[in-house]
Amino acid sequence: MNNKPVRVRFAPSPTGPLHAGGVRTALYNYLFARQQGGQMLLRIEDTDQNRYVPGAEAYILEALEWLGIGIDEGPQQGGPHAPYRQSERKEMYREYAERLVQEGKAYYAFDTPEQLDDMRKRLEAAKVAAVQYNAITRTEMTNSLTLSAEETKARLESGDPYVIRMKIQPKEDVRFNDLIRGWVVVHSSQIDDKVLLKSDGMPTYHLANIVDDHLMGITHVIRGEEWLPSAPLHVLLYRYLGWESTMPQFAHLPLLLKPDGNGKLSKRDADLGGFPIFPLEWTDPNTGEKARGFREEGYLPGATANFLALLGWNAGTEQEIFSMDELVASFSFDRVHKAGARFDIQKANWFNQQYLKQLDDAAIIEELKPLYDAKGITVNQDQLTQIVHLLKDRVHFIKEIVSESLFLFAAPEEYDQDVVIKKWNEEAVNAIGAFKDALAGFNGTFVAHDIKEVLSATMESAGIKMGKIMQALRLAVTGAGAGPDLMIIMEILGKGEVVSRLETALSRLSAQIRLA
Ligand code: GLU
Image (cartoon, rainbow, N blue to C red; front, side):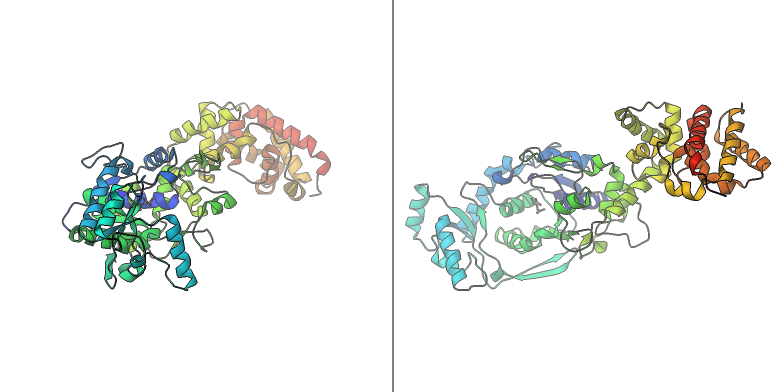
């Protein structure tokens, strides 16, 4: 088992958009496969027709691609074990269920929904702790263990609906060594006689999952903690099918928790908090309801993957920023936590800011153009370059550059009153008046460095310390008391616009001058 090349699979059910936990599962599978020089499979587990949602598979593929999670074998890539969609493999599963029946490890059960319901009520009334179809209760139900061989045969031939159930042997220890949780031991009496083949002939998740993992040569099953309770059953299935010696190793990943750490993260938390938990935007085809996506909210794919990778894992060092290659190199199950990981969107924002800083200006400009277009703002290439320099380090998202730069395209309509009250005094008004006149008479190139020289020369001859009037000057130019480099702002605005804004402020705020 240990020398086999690593083969892992991401096995989502196309029942809706992939949430952050699912994406993280895919990511860890991918990291481990790449690190081990193995293969990463994508298998679509769509045997449950009732839960099938159109568009979900395409969504999953697009999300993985956006995040750079490469797939070696799958529905689109093909591969030696095609098809990779369980609905296209459905004929394959029955044989294994039937084989278990032949070997006495499974049985046909003909119980009607009413009979099952009666059993449940009877056991509940008798205060039985585990209301289950199991070694005890199966003896009172309608199945091939209680019916004669002839009757079973007759029922099968007459087309009576039936399922195939696993015949769990009581009093067996089921154990496996989880790569994250260590030894997990469960007593088989706690496991019920799970249905393997449904009455419509389709396999259940359990059967299809184990058969496929075996046939596809999967060496490691890396999946969410919600599957941990199913794992003992899966171990038994491997045992009953005679495949225990090549059984994959299990790694059950910690849950993603709400931002406050209390309970499992849900879509409701995302809606209430106004943040995404899905990689891409999703519109429910049945209800039309929309869910936010990291991509559409403006998170960069690298930042998103980095954020998700650190939900439940760390390298054991201070390092937080990891390229995909670095993640591949550093990932290990030893450092995946057992406890749930708190989903902190502030951290995602921080990652986005770090990735944005690293991004080429040209790439940012490409993204910015349509955003300005959408606002009906015309900007040329030079202005875009200047704006990116001005704001790139101050924002978390590219779209914020647009909202933070609107003041460049329209003179202030109002002035921050707190700043007016504190800083708009006689001295400032005199200084700004003098600066305005100096600018009007300035004939050099209107660039930040020279603007600053004009300002300091003017202040020097007026005998005013620059530091005392800078906030008032900013207020006059932008309407606000704080922001990015004012000299560059003035350069971007151009001489005419700056002079006009200064004039406007001097006249509009003339009634509000404070005594110095
Ligand atoms: N189809 C299951 C899911 O939707 C797969 C669980 C597993 O990886 O075994 O998560």
